[in-house]
Structures are given as C-alpha cells and as structure tokens.
Image (cartoon, rainbow, N blue to C red; front, side, top):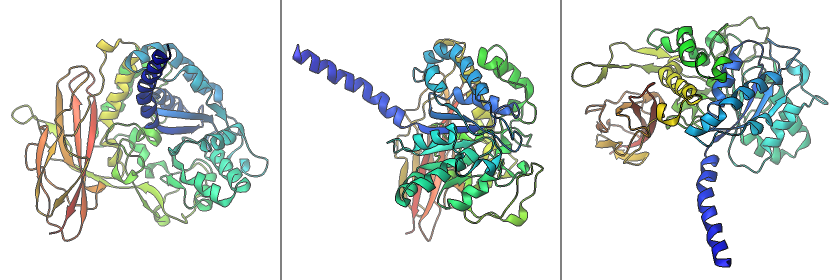
Length: 477
C-alpha cells in the first residue's frame, strides 16, 4: 500500500507540474477601469475575459476618470463576469485553463468615487488601492501589469501608501515589479506618478489629446489598414449576434471601439509579443523609451493638466510598413506597392490578426471544439537567437509548425527593422512564404541586431495567426 501511495503521489506531481509551469508563464494583470463612462470599457472587458486562460487576471478595479468623476461601477464589471459564467462550460471545451466565475468575481474591487489627486493622500486608501498592494506583495516573481483604462489615482494611492509605510529598499523592490500602461492621461495623477516614481516602468502617450496616442489605431480608419474588421457591421456579425451572452452584452460603438484594449493586447503569449520589450513591437503597438517633446504635445478638452515629462517614459514609436498582398498566380504572396509609416502603424498593422483572434474566441462561446477554429502552432527548427558574421548567409527554419485542427497553414518571414539596432530593411533572399528562408546578413562595422518574424497562419474560419521571433546578432569581420 505504501508503494502504491508513493506511485500515485509521483504521478500527481508529474501531472500537476506542467499546469503549474504554464500558469507561471502567464502575465499577471490588474485592470483599472472607468466602466460606465462610455461603452468601450465594457467591450474591452468582454474581450479580456476571453483571454483569461492566457492572462492571469489578478484585479478588476472600478475607478473614476476625467469623464466619470464622482462614481465607480463595480457592478458593471460583475455583470460582464456573469455573462462569462453562462459560456464558461463551452469555453472550457476549448481550453480547461479558463478560470472559474467565482475566482474572477473575487478580484472585483473599487477605488474611491473621487477624481484624480483629490483621492490621493493620507486617509485616502480604498479597497482598490489596498488590493494592488496585496497582490504586489505576494511571493510571485512575475511582473505585475497595471492596465489603466481611465484615471490612475487608485494606483497613485497604492504607491503613496507603499512609499509612506515601507523602508526604501522594499519600496524599490515593489516598484521594480510593476509595469504600467495607461490609456493617455485621464486624470491628474498620471504625471504625479511619473514624477514621483522615476524608475517605474510606464507606457503612455502623455496628455489628453487622444489623436496623439498610438492606442487610437485600435479603432480609427487608416489608409492601408483592414478597416472592415473594426466596422460596425463586422462587429454585429462576428461578435454581437449569435455568439451567446458575452456577444449580447457587447454594446454598440459610441465614440470608438475598445480604446482600452491596446493596454493589454501585448500580454497575450502569441510568439510575437514580449511585454518586457515594448520597443520590439507587438499586438498592442511599439514604444520606445525617451522624454517626449512637450512643445509638440497638443491639448485635449478633458481638463487634465499638461506638464512636461521630467524623465524618460515608454511612448509612441514609428514603424514603416509595406504590407504583403495575396497573389492569385504564382507565389501566393508578394510585397505590395504601398508603404505606410507612423506610430499608429505599429498597432494597426496587426489589426486583422487580433480581430480574427477575437472572433474565433467568440465562436468558442457557442461551438464544440470540432466546429471552431484554433490558432496554429509556430515552431522553430533553429534557436530563437543566433549569431552570424557580417555578410554571412544564414537559414531560417520553421519546420515542425502545425495546426491543431488539421488546417493547411501558410508561412511568412519578414524583417522588422525598427525592433533591432540595424535599421535598414534586410531582404529575404528566397521565397518568404516557405517554411524555410535564406537571408544574407548585411555588412556591418559594429555589432548589430536584426529581428526576423515568422508568421504562421491557418486557412480556417476565421484565419488565425501565431508567430516566432528570431533575433540575429551580426558581428563585424
């Protein structure tokens, strides 16, 4: 009996360990939302819950903003979670890692129904600010992402309390675990946080003029982008109607579709995203660390004050993008004739991919596994980081990639020059749509890095894509 018990215990450990390891690879996230200001927070919340198998949601906190100054609405978060409850059994047919409704409800908290810095200071702690501290103090070495969809004063209060009550060494340790992405500045606490915690990892398009922000590319019409997949008719067909309670609760667009979603899109483990490196680019856009020029910052109408930044922040970065287009005869893809550039490009270039991914997950709410589409698996037959010499040829290889549904898959290799130190575009010498590709390294006089992206797409409905990134270190002769 003792031997049987030991064998059973060992089998339990072997079975549980992969699940635990997978969970540790997920990015931790707390959301601050001014839900009920307008419909887009509810839209973003619905999408987020459909990625709760891939992102470790630690907090959903109702807050104020410049548009919602005197009330908070945790009940509206709970309403979305209750809709999730109805589809959870079906979602688990596609991935058993979707969390329970009760675990999500336990993360719903609220900040003070007070605007901005009026809610920060001695005696201004709230359920929400204390929850941030509690999660931050947990013995978990993973960074804690704070995704701010409205005002940031609940985070400011948490930081104020930490700074007032803990030794400097502990303050620095806790701050080092935080990662913040705010959707512009929607109260006056954002600039206070950045000024008072200069080492805090902070992504923002500063100010309240939203046209300046990278995130606006989530929903705005842009030449060159797939604008159909953010249209009202597309949303009605693929998200809102015939997809169960989450779709039923997805409201019509009022001002812009899901303006808050870019703050967490890069936390999805899709092979392209690396949230620790905003400068590498991903579904949520690309950002570089510098002090923005305040003289070029336009003023919005929210009443949020504008001030020059006192330190470097992660903010807007420009991409130049020439889309590949479908070719009906011969090689199935070719380089298009139009190129586009700007910080908005860094986000909308992935729009078709992340919208199709959302639509597929809405299908998961109602369809059995065999009738829905699931993303392909991109695999490399080479290391994710390689070193070559100046002028040397090298091979890229994605053999082993496959689709779990048995769909046919397509490959696309391309250089992402803005992500590396070598800023000139490096051509693929062979056909870029084979599982393997040949590249000749440029001639360099100092060490350079170049990023090559593999995109694997299936031919299911909707077509889904996953990626791998190969970082090539190029050494001079």
